[in-house]
Image (cartoon, rainbow, N blue to C red):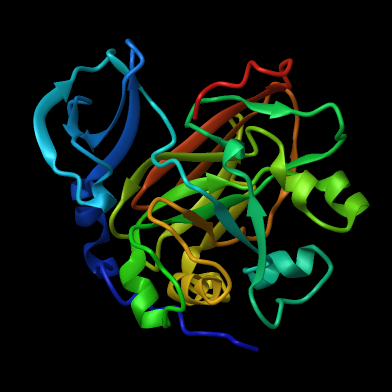
Length: 289
C-alpha cells in the first residue's frame, strides 16, 4: 500500500498551542456585496471585510477598502476550475462501505457547479431516494502543481477549508460510477473561509439539526493518505491550478439527509460549515456560490 506518514510539513503549528493559534487564525473569504460586486478579502473580528485586490493565492494584497457587516454575504471562499475528491481515505469509512482502504488513492471529480456557500441550501434531487452527507477537510491549491513530489506539493497547498461531499448514495450504487451521484448542483458546500494552517490533531465532526451528538467524529490525522501525498499523487495525473480544491475524504459515520434537515460540519482550527436541505428548485434558480 502506498501509505504515507501524516506529516503536514509546512505551515503547521504544534497542538500544544492549538487554542492560541485558532484564536489568531486569519480568515480569508470571498464575498458578494449587496450591489453585486465580488471581492476576496480578510474577515476581521468585528465582521468587517478588508478587501484584497486579487485572490490572495495569486499574490493579492490588502487594500484600504473595507466592507461593513450587512453590506455583503459570504460566498464559497474560492471558485475552483475543478474539485478533485478522494474516496475511502479513512480506514473505518472504507470498512463501513464494505471494503478496504484502496491500495492507491481513489480519485473522482465533482463539477464546479456543485459548489455552494455556507448557509446556502443543499437541493435534494427528485432522482434520488437516499442523499448522504460526508464531512471533509478541503485543500485549496495556491500555485500550479504538475508532477510534484510530496515535499513540493505541500508548498502548493495555500490553505484549508471545510467541505461536504454530498452524495446520492442510491445512484452511486446503481450507476457503478460516481459522476451523477456526486455531481448534482449544490452537492459541494464549501467554506465558510480559508485558513493557512491546521493541526494534524484537529477533530472533524458532523452534526444534524440540534442533536449535540456528532454523527461523524475523527481526527484528520486518521486519513490514510495525507494532504501532501494526495496533492502529489493527483499532480501526476492532472495539473492542479490556483484555486482548485482537493477533498481529502470522509471519516466513518455517513448517513442520510432529509428535506428540512440542517447539516453542520466542524473542523477545529477552521470553524463550521452549515447548510439546510430543501427540495430541488426548478432549473435556473440555483444560488450563486
